[in-house]
Image (cartoon, rainbow, N blue to C red; front, side, top):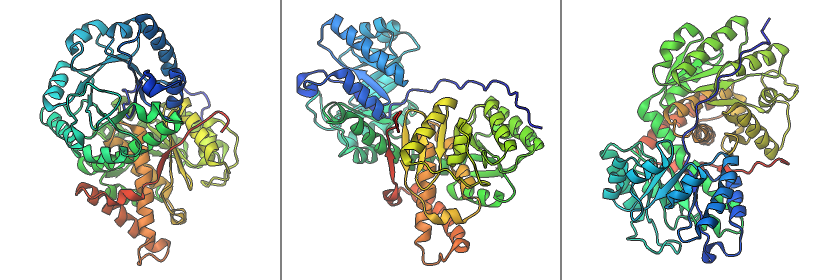
Length: 516
């Protein structure tokens, strides 16, 4: 009998700052108009802004401190860092997460003495020399630009364009500062964000970690929608970065899965560029976890011995700090599976939990009826998005809720992926092998587990779309080899810098509301 008394799940380490959708505020009448800044920022946070910089260089000290406090309460509620532009004293007084300084402001060393080692310090850089110096001085991230001319910053030394940003990124790599996050700023908006991200990328060595915007959100009629659109551009731009990272690093994909899909899963791992090992024997896990890969726990077969192996392997990968993808196959089908799923969830930390609606509902605690591994639940896309986000928040993880539209959420940011084909449902093990694909992405692209999971779902679906269009595909039997070929073709094309396949990506940021 499976034990219902389980240990407390280990807590996850704190996540590094996410600079993906970076809002810089502007309180001037020309930009803010008669809007309320707090309301604008809150709407932007709902839409997916991941970092906020409060900029008011000329405001009265008391008024600036008061506004900073109000904004900090708001950003803390959303788990987003608040940075103060230039005015270090304000940041120190309110105790926010950090500051951003320009070339004419206080230098990094002086600022560090005031704010402390645990705070974020960002620096604006307009040239290679400024960027390298800021990195050497200890900047936590750089704001590169101005990219295009802008009405919000009139003291710009020069416009560097996308080529200038790319030149700085390459120089950072050559100087050994590739790990320092970067955003670009200056004239970036939803009309040109995709172009900016593509043209600035110095991949495979380095790409931007996000875009910083002012007017694109502050002046928008709907700041939340503007932020969501930007988040979508960021997600799509990350797909080839994750795919390319898998191809370059060949991460181990350790699959603890059922015998039915082991061969298929191994071939999918190879096709996307990973190195597969199919091992359900947990005594090997400690050694395998040291190889820099990821573990897939696929609960297709649940036995007391298997459950003990899962738990031992989960502990080994948690101890090594390596990601785990949990696939609670048929979690709601039987009382044994429900108990096993609960016990596994309490055992350790998971980078990604992947499942269909019924499986995710079961893990969340909703009573459902499940026919085998198939889902019988019928929820709308907004309802499924809400479910994915709720489970992600509950377990501090990324949830990939599969279906005709995949929903991927880390509890605050939620994306829908509308790639794939119905033929995938005619093949045994496609859900399991999606977990294998995602494991490769999260192992190779740890910068953002959510976007790595989005990349896995999108690439899996795009390969299926290409495969069904082939003349040699007549049904499930001919689909499988074609699907493997297309996964491989995407990996190969990405390595060669050919991203024409990316036009098929259908990824959007979605809003999750309490009344969804």
